[in-house]
Amino acid sequence: MSSPALLVLENGDIYRGDSYGATGTTLGELVFNTGMTGYQETLTDPSYFGQIVVMTAPHIGNTGMNDDDAESRDIWVAGFVVRDPARRPSNWRSQRSLEADLRDNGIVAISGIDTRQLTRTLRDGGSLRAGIFSGDALADDAALLEQVRRAPAMSGAHLADAVSVDGEYVIEAVGQQRAHVVAVDLGIKAMTPERMAQRGMRVTVVPSSWTSEQILALGPDGVFFSNGPGDPSAADRSVGVLRDVLDAKVPFFGICFGNQLLGRALGFGTYKLKFGHRGINQPVMDRTTGKVEVTSHNHGFAVDAPLDGASESPNGYGRVQVSHVCLNDNVVEGLECLDIPAFSVQYHPEAAAGPHDAAYLFDRFLDLMTGRHTTGGAR
Image (cartoon, rainbow, N blue to C red; front, side):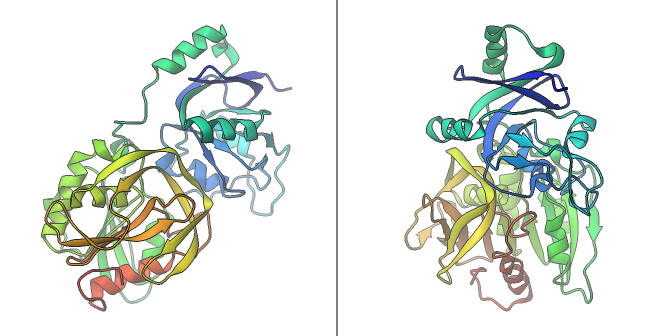
């Protein structure tokens, strides 16, 4: 029989449900994910480090968990919120239940609450700090609310180093090697270097703490900055490394956090979105082709760059244009440098989980490295 649990929001709202996964206390930024599937990839995405994730789809856990779909070495979410968890998994690939994995990894979760109402609260008021409390952690409501309000905010948080690898590793190219990429792990998902390897790229994944001298000493044909957690305004070191890469005219491709860091390196600002984009069904237009793509997102920050036409990089890197925009809210979803070989997008072209509409971006990166594009990189 399940035991009681509380979800406490910093605005004072309290949701009473059932303990799910591990029992205890967890604190973090409360965000929602609109994907109807892909919860295992969500849980193991390092970009969710420090966040309590609400799944808007009501039924979660139906397909269980397996050893093949994890996107990293750990479950990174601070907590997990679901409405109706599956009583038992039913899928031929399932090796254990979702709740068992949450419990074994110490992830405090809650079930049995109205996630539609919760999502509306986050859409209206924006992402909030929250806490899940169960077992011996249950206490007076006012005391729990005080714990939540003392928790650190996501704004200003530097988190990439906490999720990055300790040392480099290599994913060999499939078939003939066509290029060598150094991928900086700011919270990289496992499928990303795999997608590059499938296109003949040998990928050396390196820690977020590596200097530009260490990266460039490997003689890469291109440098890649991955997704990752935290506030890009707190990532000055990584921005400095990226500026050295741009100065060296080494082809660059960034996704998600890497897109925000490219924006900062070029001299643009970043800002926190009200509630962010998280899910595998986000519509984006590629302005270089006019094509609309359904894409996989996980970001709470965005680049503040002029939407129309080319503008000059405030830091002297030539002309830059916004290459992709979100069709829901016109948020910048991609940058294209017209005078240096660099481009980026704000979403996940590796699509794990998610649609594969954006897989062509890895081909663009390969073309940029092998000289099939002129300076400007993304077209």
